[in-house]
Length: 199
Image (tube, rainbow, N blue to C red; front, side, top):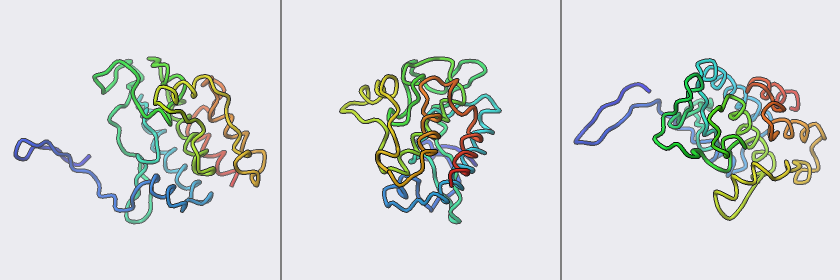
């Protein structure tokens, strides 16, 4: 955020110009390769490691919040609903569930107050699954149904949709999307390293 102000009673913020679109755009166009994902995940891991070190949990990691500059470098955007881990505070007025259900960790879907960086790792896992399969791991007819699926439904097999991939891919997905956060990759960097190894 470079600046902010008000013009004709309209608040505004000044941010970096990101002409490269979003990861959602690239996934929709099927223009994301595995090597490309490795680079993107390394960039996101660095951003999240910095945020987590400052006690900030993003809580809304999704393809639409990954933006690209004119050189194709990925940036994480939209820190509007971050959770401040050190004091339990949040930047939102609501005390309920906030975020995007399609990418929400089970603990976030349960509106737990003690979220940590592993919730963001889960969301990265959903993005990884979607980027490789073209589908979300969980779907339902309502947002509440999707949130509930993240809590109770078994982790889907990536190789059911992509039988050409080695078994290690399902192992990485199972760890990233573990229902119990203690069973997940402990940091975004650890997950990004696993994605790099798979590639």
